[in-house]
Length: 185
Image: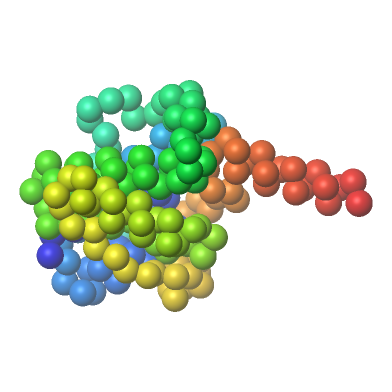
């Protein structure tokens, strides 16, 4: 099957790339993550995604129909989304992945978001299935969480940048708020 893999970052992409290639799928990577803040973090994760794709010999595409990085627009839309910022994050990125897979004539799309133990797995799956229905392309569901530790070990061995928060301004704020609470106690 010809699959588009939405890649959120290098470490999360390693196991999906490896497993999908082992299953015989022809892969194309797609890095579309306007949620990542600040720009320096975005650039680190972009580079990590390029390294992971190169490690597996997979081409990595970027958005061509709009600015690649637009944190202000993403934040405004996330705050206005009735399902909350995470629902917007999943649905907007998977919607663009579905559009891209369809435009490229691929059979299906999936996401490295399905690797993370820290993400709302069912929310990701639902967003993928809804995007698939909207764009007439299949969503390829696979639970990559069983390979969590193997992915961590491989990303460390490869020297990939390993982030400490989901990516958006709000998740970064939550991360540092927890750190601040630890310091206060």
